[in-house]
Every structure is written in structure tokens, then in C-alpha cells.
Image (cartoon, rainbow, N blue to C red):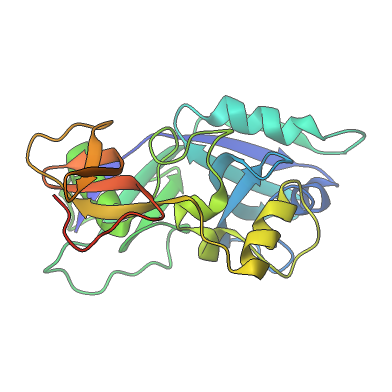
Length: 250
């Protein structure tokens, strides 16, 4: 296993109306989120476009912590405050640390009980995080490789605020509840799900030639099938068009 510190923008939402307000705003159902538990969620525009993909943790009664990729905290705060009218809850940025612990191919089982919801085979330690013993110190390159292997989208790379729709991200199953009440942007998400509609493009794991750069065309049989969004050697994530042939990637 390896550990790697990575930057997350973190906010606390606290107050008597914190739970009810967040329940009305996020795509995840928070009613069953016990104190100490966490889950992934979207904050959406009313049009259904993604503002941020975030993690929400129920810290205590009337206290929640949300974190998202570094550089998108201000966007998240602005969205949280956008509809906060006569709501008894404060949104406060936190200077919290995040340590990712990820399992490597030859490792045994990893105990996920001590951390928050994470992507891939591992756990994230958020807050006063301490490097776990018996783990090597990893690098940002290690973490990128793990993220690509997990096909997990990153803000600013696979997710462009105000442009990307949830169905393109591949994480709707873990970030959206289809049994909760209304929230901004729900109509598009529900309509696509009920109709079994496919997104016009989708994030996929692909193989690319050595030296491929982010932003390069992803080619299938010599034709442009999408655009590369993250790269680690010959492994990459790409935003692939729905009608692209995938049997013979170049």
C-alpha cells in the first residue's frame, strides 16, 4: 500500500437547518447518512449540469463537511450559498488535510473503516490525517495512476463545471439517489435514467501511445472518437463519443 497527501477544498455546513438545507440541494440522500458516515454527491445547476462532484460527511448533529478537488472550493461555496435564503446554517471553509491510502496489486485486504468514502481500492483520511504505518510514501504520479485505474473523474479534467452532465461521469450509481426528494438539476438526471438514455459522451479508460498529452484526440481506426483528459504512461481517461467504435483503439 502507499499513502499520498493530496489537496482537497473543504467546507463545514453547520446549524439547525444544515441537514434539511443540504438534503434539498445535493443529489445524494442524506437522511440515512449516520453520524460518522460519508458519501459522494453532486451539486448541480438547475439545468442539470455539474457544479462540483463532492464528498459529504455527517460529522455531528447539524454539522456536515463537504470536500471537493482543490481549486473548486469557491465554486462549491458559491453554489451552497446560492439558494440559502433564511436558512439557519453557516458555510465555513476549513483548512483540512487529506491523505489517500491506496492498495497496490500485491497487497492484502485494506481496512476502510477508519476513513471516509473514497474512490478506487483504498481509503481517504480527512482532517487531522496521519500517515498510516507500514505504507510507503507515494507520489502524485502513483495517485494519478490509481485514479485512472479506478476510472474516477477529476474536477477540471473529466468534469468541467457548468458543462458536464452527471451521466457523462460514470459515477451516478454512487453519487445520486433516485428515491430522495427534489433538488436543483434533478429533472435532467431523472429523465435520462427513466428513459434509459445514454450520455452523448462518457468518461472511459483507454490505452494511448507513449507521449500522449492531455487534450489530445483519442483515435479509433484513425478517426477522432474523443479527447484525452488524464494520462499516466499508456493508461488514460478520455471523454469518448457515444457512437465511437471501441473495438480497435489506436
